[in-house]
Length: 111
Image (cartoon, rainbow, N blue to C red; front, top):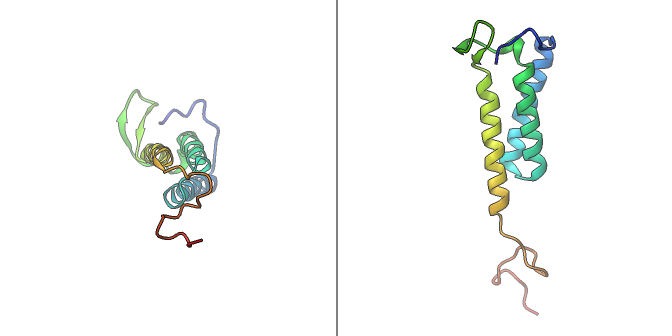
């Protein structure tokens, strides 16, 4: 969102570092879904909304003359969506029974 009166100033380097953080957290969420991955992706996606000014792109929808939806706001939307999918994947993960190490009956060594 574009509203520059209250936003802290950032340079393009720090914005790119934060954007890279969003991508790294998204990769982590896709490869090894965990609560930590979902939380850090959510945090970096929300921070991206506030610090993307130097590289935010064109305004796609204007709310008023200072506020609007920009191209880079979709990075935050995608990050938050992926964090939600990560939480769903964590909740659907089968719970291991005590004594099992995630092996099926056929994979267990006979005693």
